[in-house]
Amino acid sequence: MVSLSFLSSSTKRPLWQGQLLVVLCVVVFSLLGIGTRTSEYLASFWGTNAVMLGLLLRNPHWGRDWRTWAYAYAAYALTDWLMGTAPFWAFGMAAANELGVAVGWWLFMRKPRRVRELQQSRSVLELLQACLVAALASAAVGGALSWMRFEIPWWQAYVMWAVSEFAAFILTVPVFLVAARTKVWSWRSWWPDKPMDWHYALPLVTLIASEAVAFVMKGPGTLGFSVPAMIWYAMAYGVRPTVLLNFVLSLWKMLSISIGSFTFSLADINDVTSLRLGVALLSLAPLTVACTYALRQQSLGQLRQLVDYDALTGALSRRALLERGGKLLQRMRGEGQPMVLLMIDLDYFKQVNDLYGHANGDKVLQAFVRSTQAVLRPEDVLGRMGGEEFVVILPRTALAQAQRVAQRIGDQLRQLEIVLDGSNVIGVTCSIGMAAITQWDAHNPLELHLSFADHALYQAKAAGRDCVRVYQDPGR
Ligand SMILES: Nc1nc2c(ncn2[C@@H]2O[C@H](COP(=O)(O)OP(=O)(O)OP(=O)(O)O)[C@@H](O)[C@H]2O)c(=O)[nH]1
Image 1: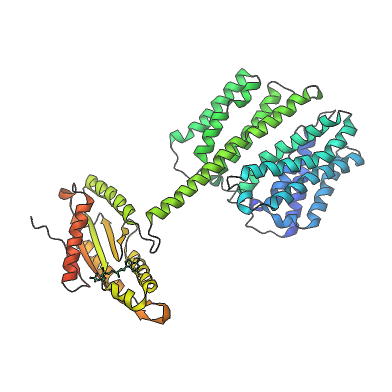
Image 2: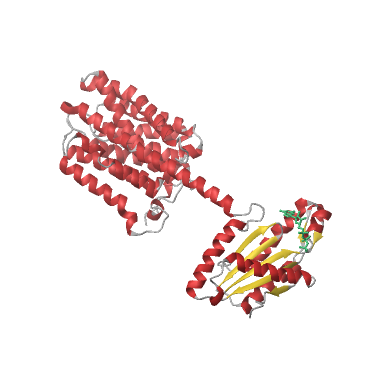
């Protein structure tokens, strides 16, 4: 398997390897760009600068060494020169190319990491700004050189250079920026984390269909045909797949423009420039949607975490416990499986607070949850009802089995030595009330079964605490 670990910011390779890679990329991509040159003008696609910028953004320590820039400059100029360009133009163009990369790198590196990695809502605007300024800087030199060399109006030379640089930057750099958070060699990491089913493919199918219609219909308006599908995939797939799809789609659009309605020549240069700019800018819409949507999902996730889990102990909150318990009850009823509820209350907990303070009381609660969780299976549910009262739900569990679990919870807690602030070590016990839910009474709501467990807990407390009691239905 080909290793692409050079794309991973987490792998710090020796500097010389990085520099060699930058030089190789400059040579290969420059040759590719030179291959697209028409006889009378510059390359119709020049991705070298964007790729070099992307590599340096992923591996910032390469860019901090001046030799990287010197080697890259030599690679730019020599490749062009060896391919037949006069030395003055070759070295001048190399300066223009590297200036754009340097300005882009400097601007991006000043931004906070989360902004750079497209994890903030303002990321796309910052990306736009950095790519624009880098392209304008490169065009300041490159535009002047191509004006002198090709005798076209100076403004046209400048705009052409700036737009082509900007388009390459805005489409390529995000691929490197988001790849910084992932393992690029795993294709799976570029795909959404959600389960795959057929309706998941709909945005992609819509995209292909709209591009097919655009290709057949032709005309300037077809550029926007794919916008609904772009917005859709941005919302459905998230940032990373969006960046990748934007890249592929934009390349396709530029290609389809050149094989469909336009050919690249100086005669329709303004059309080509404006189309190129349009295609590049089009990608910003889904990218913004994807970034904003991802942030929203992240905030919702954090909010859900806050609502669903007790901040002190990490057990489920009362609300989430009742919700999950209700669903489990339904499922067990459907499957005809038994389920058991344990209502657990720490004994004489008030005394712990009174003697050692509230903060130490909190420590005891946390220790109890840790020790109980160690006894439970992954499918069991532990929640905090409030204060020092907890509930454990044991799905697919018969009463005898649940009694052993309850015993183990009690034993484990009894053996625990809890170290408090001030190096006091204490032990605590708990009382447990159990209620078994069998198939035939599963239609009762969870709250009723909980009240049975509570009743049994009351009996455990009355019996002297540190023991387990099972609810006995008086009707049976
Ligand atoms: N440290 C701490 N104490 C809490 C928290 N929530 C409730 N408590 C305290 O838990 C104590 C519960 O006391 P009681 O209901 O009298 O129960 P107990 O002392 O355990 O007595 P029994 O249950 O009868 O064995 C009270 O002192 C509450 O202030 C909490 O989050 N942290």
